[in-house]
Length: 211
Ligand SMILES: Nc1ncnc2c1ncn2[C@@H]1O[C@H](COP(=O)(O)OP(=O)(O)OP(=O)(O)O)[C@@H](O)[C@H]1O
Ligand SMILES: [Mg+2]
Image 1 (cartoon, protein in one colour):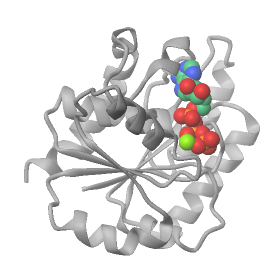
Image 2: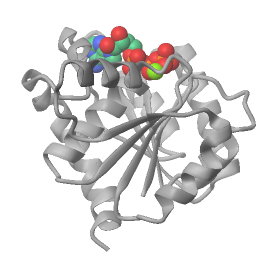
Image 3: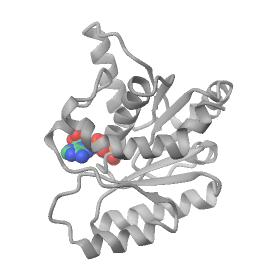
Image 4: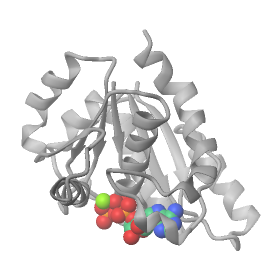
């Protein structure tokens, strides 16, 4: 199955959540995972190459690829539908090369936070996605949430986003998230990501990988 992690809002946590989900699916769920890094900064791929230099055994492959290569890559990954392909998208919607990526997604994971600017980007992203691939399931993950978010703001935003997909429980802002890499997730993070990822796995991933 193909899972894309996107939001045109920069810094929402796309690359971090891609890594966390790759680690979770590989370690906790024994899924076969491949990550395609399509972020222009290729932050995941750089971490992966660094880890390889340190001779860590990598639990999954990371491929850095441009959007123009996607149609071919899709044929490769689509031939093993029980494996999970996670795609970290660039934080911009202005490239036609994104259309086949959006079209191929079974699931879209969209990190966001509760501020006005992010909300607008998140809605725009969801509208564009819905036009290109109305069948894709969408899961919104509130990320980097500070304890002082107003309850009204949170429930208003959740209500609006619920028109496009499912909103998970929030992931807090914690310094440990800076230490996530391709060879592991800091243990301190597990208690906050388990409720989010178990729900996504149960609702959307398990049936694809066990058909
Ligand atoms: N829950 C969190 N708590 C604290 N820091 C976080 C959290 N999630 C992500 N970060 C940090 O926020 C920064 C931006 O995250 P990340 O690079 O994952 O975002 P992105 O959406 O991929 O950004 P870009 O649009 O630039 O590709 C990183 O330094 C990351 O370590
Ligand atoms: Mg990124």
